[in-house]
Image 1: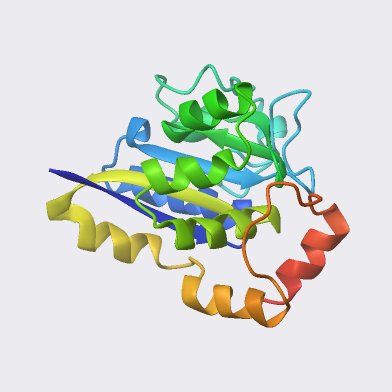
Image 2: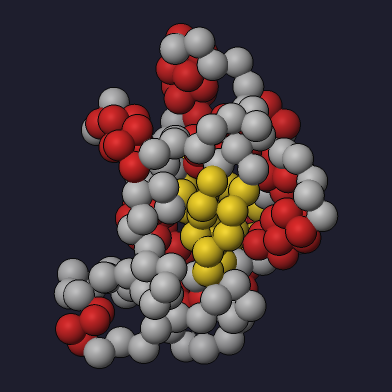
Length: 205
């Protein structure tokens, strides 16, 4: 039996580190998904690269690393999930960089013009309630990132602990959002700018 674990992170860097941890722990990259805000343009959509794809502390461009594939190149290869990043847009969130099995749900919904498709994808595929999905989607809109992993139930506790290392505490984040006047995710909301994302992240450092 398998179960799905999802976590929200404050930034793409923390989410990418979680993906690497999961792969190092033996989770196949075909069972991991990442969706990260690109409001601050950390991902170079033109060249499909970012400076430190393998998180080894060195600029991959200087290392001559090959550019990653688009959303259609999500499986296969030996370098893991992060080689398959691609850019897409989500209503109410704006540009995101995504890879993995959850992308097919998002891409299909986006192509069909389904309003609020991120909520449907998270609540139907990522193991979250609708209430949790709203907080995750709002966190994504504000510059965050979501990692979802399909794992064996026997390994779930161990992998949850691994994913929790730098994850957002959802109850606390929901309370903070509501304190500022937020009620629920709005797919018609204006996406955050890079400056707004930076201000938002600074609240939780």
